[in-house]
Length: 398
Image 1 (cartoon, helix red, strand yellow):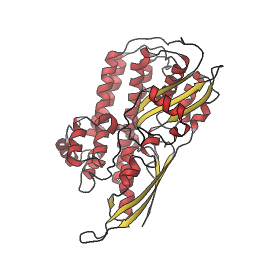
Image 2: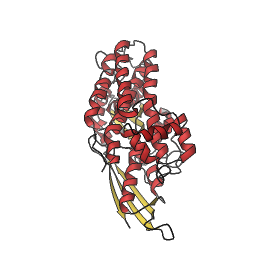
Image 3: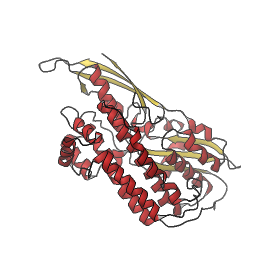
Image 4: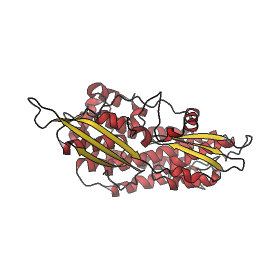
């Protein structure tokens, strides 16, 4: 199992079958002849049916164990689309809330999940300073803490408080993750890893080692869609899309690598090591490094705003999309004539990354390992790089 300090959204079971590989120099070597991946996510979205928009948005963060702010924002955006509400004046502040939550999620990985993959004690207490800084963002944007609701809240940004919170987040990253400036390219990453000044650097050293850097590569395209209209058509048109989503007829990957594929660090690591564990980890580091810069730009663009009101005709249907640390989240819902939710569907990053033929399954199939224990640990590393907040049970059969 992955570490359970951070509540998991459902679970994933992985069954691997090893085929021995004979021949000189292959003593003990095997390949994963077959990988079966099954994701089990509670369909809590059905609990939104029968609720009014305000109630559904309040309930969403309580229903889903991960990314509560993003869940609430996605539902709020879906309700706004269904009610004809234009909340564009709230979007900069909303992105700031989502990015702060993503930084918190990445931070949890750095001090809980990554040490576990190194076999050393996790450090959840180190999260206290980061979470204090993250929790200061909402009241510094919305004094009434009412930002996550249909139409948005009373937005009165406190620039000084926001910059102070961001400075604390930056300081936390510099101390707990990077122990200095973030690596910029593959050479810089190797030097940083060699110094081993943080758990993240020590994990980088392991993943850059022979046999691991390019391990777990799968020929999976990036999820290239982020528009609510595309997700609305997919979710409303096919009830099975929520449990087995498809992009251009096949599986897709979402998450840090999708967002950061063109980042200089990721591009350099990809050129040197290919599409494997090292590339996935570099994307997570790049995401961590870029979040404070993106938040800084958002703070500069903030302006006061009041809640937006419904301006459309009778209630209809709508879709809301939100970015999380783990990837893209979408909620679609339909309102009845009384303004209550008559149908609700969602697709989460877990549904993409742990599809039966998705990035995890493709990355495992045919990969070389050295026995059962090695296969299990490598599979855990790949799970951690794709979606570390999901509890994962792994069975290995020879």
